[in-house]
View 1 (cartoon, rainbow, N blue to C red):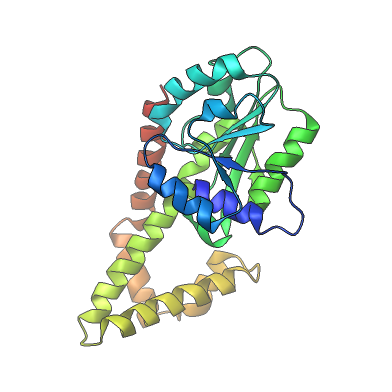
View 2 (tube, rainbow, N blue to C red; view 1 turned 90 degrees about the vertical axis):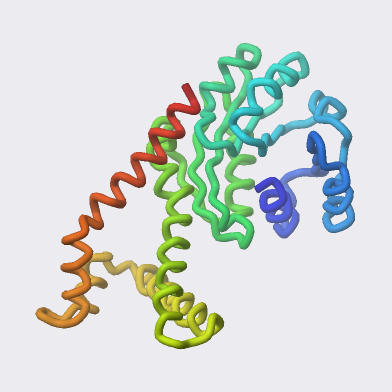
Length: 255
């Protein structure tokens, strides 16, 4: 995710930052590769630049935040601290950083790699207007975004962040079924990928999903039989349970 964000920023015609510094804890070889590929400056530790930076963006697992925030706390002098970790909202960071620290949360998804993420973002109580603009610059460098409350992002991460995995699982199972009819892997991938892309294009027209579903469904026809089967298997309840499982897991990690 870190690479998706800084590469997206570097593609922007107007650069919001004079310099981008990047570090990681263990894989210095990877850091060197990134420095060769992008106009970034690698640093050995975050301590080498944290006190001078305007924005500190944390792209690490939620479990690593406690230790890193503790290390950063003595270096905070008005910087904006952003995390992209699931379950770590601005209030969580504010509780671990000096009083008055500006904290923000961006929750992107992996489509950030191709500039089409839908990112949810929230601001803490100390974020200045200029800092909010920087957050929006980061968000728009990797796709679209929606500003929400911290609690709303906790609730909706399953929809925007985790649900792409549900879509990929759906695609995988359709590919497997297509293969059972004697076509090649390449043909199966093409059929499913193109069907999904076309369906998204139809959604982008603004038509409601129910209307689009009904356009495909002839009363008493084959598609209706498939939808009835999904209903008999409690498709909507299955999705609801999956979303709640993601949300509950994230909340347990947070607490």
